[in-house]
Length: 289
Image (tube, rainbow, N blue to C red; front, side):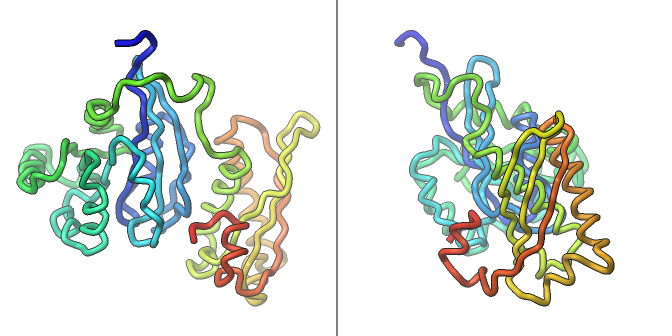
């Protein structure tokens, strides 16, 4: 084997909405790079995190939900897929047309099934769920996991590593993600919208980071919240600006925790009518078309 070869490759994290993909990515990579929201479909485009378990390197890719209409051509160049599903509903979920279509796309790619929310099942019953999943003869590995508790993460990492090929290191050790810092900051802000706004308003609000710089020893961020309807602007600002202030405070805290820096955030609300229906606008704001 040539000198310098290590297990090095790409692992795709996929699943239906609200199955805990982002939490799983964060647990596998020991980061908070992918924002987590209680509301479904908070991930809008792939978020990457590169980790180095032992003498290996894996670039994990968190993806939009299977229902999102995302272009799954990414499957053609990843080495392994981690399919996340709820342990209690996985058998029904695997029969859903969108999941069956996805699995057909992965017919040449190893797929590890992560049975999420496994803490909702008594330990003595988990093996029975794994056996049921094994009857499908579709998966190269089946691991019950609970990301927020750290349960099953080591076992899942081992299952992924078994399908990572030997090759030269893909990225320098200093590279932790393929996403820009500005994009990741915008995702931290966007996630806060789902906890404070009606779902239809949050889902139609884009976050556009105009500036990130250092001012007076702090990280300064200026960002626009762009709504698709004029009526949504008042909802976003709230009575006497209270909603916008709350969004600003939560986002400032989230950005600070993510970057490890004290942050000052300036948020502005703008209207761009029907941007959700304009492909050019969608691409500008970083959405999957």
